[in-house]
Length: 216
Ligand SMILES: Cc1cc2nc3c(=O)[nH]c(=O)nc-3n(C[C@H](O)[C@H](O)[C@H](O)COP(=O)(O)OP(=O)(O)OC[C@H]3O[C@@H](n4cnc5c(N)ncnc54)[C@H](O)[C@@H]3O)c2cc1C
Image (cartoon, rainbow, N blue to C red; front, side):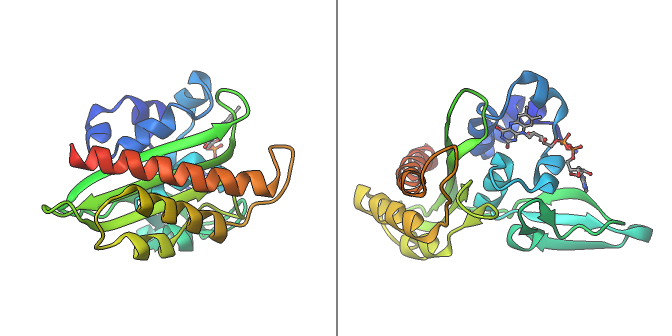
């Protein structure tokens, strides 16, 4: 499977989904990025996994292959069945990640708060926005990491943004939904309240950047 370094350095990928480069810049360090892979990240299923949040944001599907070449395709929500637990059976392997093609203008972004450079997220958020020719939002998705047992997409945010004109009040509303709907725990990285605050703020920031990028 594709290594972090390839995802970071690919200009083709950054042109279509800049969220990958945003995320890869803050994942670990060059030594880890030279070895670690997209598939390994998803299969590790750490609740703080940055690429799980990216794939959740982009509504990716996971192709799982079993004995004899039989394939099944599952959504990110189905793929992660708990912390450090996936839908991949012992005799199966993850072979491919697919991203839906949407013809509208797309922008995406990722932001993470970490205690020190390259650390796992205290909280991180990804946003993707698809705009119609008249500038209204056709679709939008937000994915959060480190605020629950697995990375979470928030359908209520998508519902609140679809069909609307991008505006600061809309990002504020989305941030408030993110803070309410996530489920962080207090640990050595911060209190649950602080993490909810970050979920709110990072959702607003990434939505703002995603819209700017979608406008070109
Ligand atoms: C010091 C350090 C810091 C890190 N910091 C971050 C960070 O800030 N953010 C972040 O998101 N990640 C971070 N990581 C994780 C890193 O990004 C790796 O991607 C992750 O450890 C997975 O590594 P890997 O691809 O080599 O998979 P492996 O370690 O080889 O595999 C992980 C698990 O998935 C299984 N597996 C792997 N590939 C497949 C497959 N295709 N099908 C089925 N099962 C599979 C393996 O059997 C194993 O159980 C960090 C890792 C380290 C060591």
